[in-house]
Length: 205
Image 1 (tube, one colour):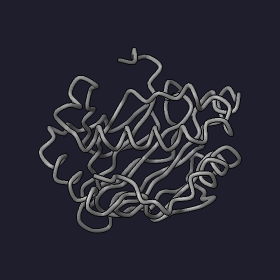
Image 2: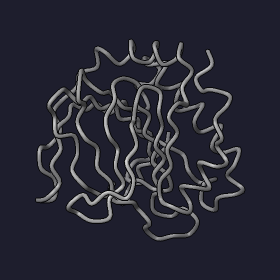
Image 3: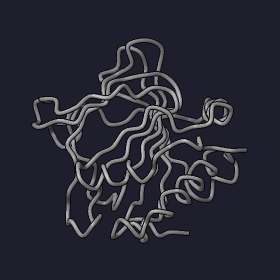
Image 4: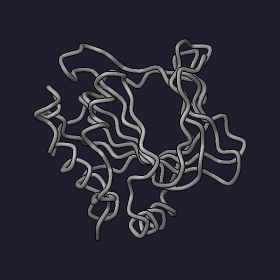
């Protein structure tokens, strides 16, 4: 089954994430695949994330990390990771450091109506190269911030099938380069996202 739409300008997205730290596409998933993916993650055993991280970051969501050895039981999640790696690596020659990007973590997060989402923060330094976030259900504002108070640089509507790319340490030789960002809670229903990342603390399998 085709996971990704054929009309996505991946070259532009990767050029943007290199230059600006983040890039957004409103629709990258094939609709039939998205439906299958939503059904697959519905019964995951989500657990609440820590409400406060580092003394300042507030977050409110349920999360489940699907380990590599579990992905055989979640073929849509495994297929999403495989398709994204394949298409992104096509352009690796344009982006130094991207050939080494081998994501080994798939994290599914569920945000309920009324949740705060995640306040302004930087992703962990251990997530190297590139962070991919795909919204598979629901809608919420995803904002790039200029400061910890949430002053907006740009806000995107992260709806079903949308994608956000975030620059991680090591991309194009930049030691850090992580963008400050926040995610609002959904205004209706719930939102489910899939984060695909390379955690340098884990050993690739």
